[in-house]
Amino acid sequence: MTADDMTAALVERRRRLLGPAYRLLYDAPLHPVRGEGVWLVEADGRRVLDCYNNVPSVGHCHPRVVEALSRQAAILNTHTRYLHDTVLDYAERLLATVPAEIGNVMFTCTGSEANDLAVRVARSVTGHAGFIVTANAYHGVTATVAEMSPSLGTAVKPGDYVRTVPVPDVYRDGPEGAAAAFTRAVEAAIASLAEAGMRPAALLFDTVFASDGVAVDPPGFVAGAIAAVRAAGGLYIADEVQAGLARTGSHMWGFERHGVVPDLVTLGKPMGDGHPVAALLARPEHLAEFGARSRYFNTFGGNPVSAAVGLAVLDVIRDENLMDNAASTGRRLHLGMARLAERFPVIGHVRSAGLYMGVEIVTDAVSRRPSGALAARLVNGLRTQGVLVGVSGPAANVIKVRPPLPFGAAEVEIVLDRTARVLGDLEAQGALT
Ligand code: PMP
Picture 1 (cartoon, rainbow, N blue to C red):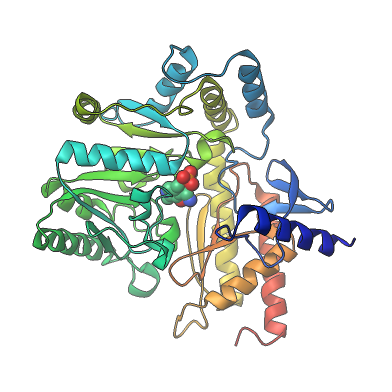
Picture 2: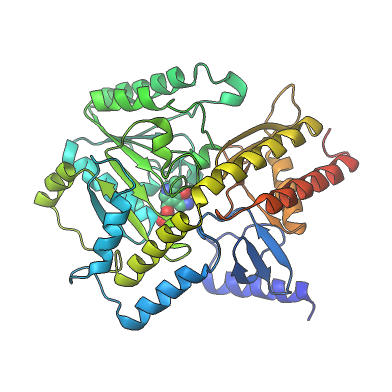
């Protein structure tokens, strides 16, 4: 069998066994068998540069994380109804990274569960029904948060208690009016809920707006909208599943860039370097309210192995200065991509915070029309060249770059070189005009 035949057989076997709801990324599906740092190794031995996966936050199979996991797995793993020091050590370390008002943590296994729990707490604390999310948001898989995830398209009907707001388009409209536009949109959503006899329980958004095409600037643009929701008696839930854990370079958490302390913070993906660890951070007065009326037990959330893994990830971020690295490498990547934009006008806009970058692909610099088709060709071209990126945004035309945090200058050069090569090839084929 050729390598292509083997891949085709695996794709077919997967479809037969797992059913049709799963999607594979890339025209040429990836079949990694090993990971190390920022690299993945495919079944045929090819190395590919991972610029897409923020889950292995401190690098694939980081030895300190693997060691912590194996050590605790060999001693004990159980659930959270027994006493255990490690989960409390981890809780202390996590809470030390957030403002003092946020004093409790509840552990879950996934970001979806963390958001689902945040929704329950917000309902319980406010007694209100309405939720406001962004127009192309993704917040997870449970029935409730899927209703608050318009990026799922027509697959899930949005809840009738959900209102959506557009994220400011700084590329086309400029940064000046972004804050006012976002505030106005949220005020209109509050008014629309009121017309339906509802008040907002919460404004919920991802602090880098990852699935809305990545929106990071200007810092603070969300403040007026949060104030409007609070004035209407609602809470602010910051979803840090994408932005969190040092990725933005300037801060540990995305909400800090905007200068407003949330009521509830949901965490996930990068916490466990690939192991399922997630959490809800909350203000004690809110959990006192919730806990008086509800119980919560999540079998695997906060188990000793997950807690040991989470602690090891925090240690690595600190000891390897990964937040500073995200800032410096992110800046280098941004500048390099902006230089490429001068050569290839289809790169309409480059936006980033640390190692979270969106590169908006358009048909031309004058019309600025989004080109999802071209973005898909670039993503698949880069995959063929051994560089993994993805897409985001309602028109799927924003290249999403969010590599593991130990990404360095040498890797930036590879990304820029391969991007230039793929765009150069597309230009030679006449695909850029
Ligand atoms: N929130 C955001 C912003 C996400 O990107 C995701 C996952 N892509 C989730 C929540 C859900 O997390 P999980 O897949 O761990 O349930």
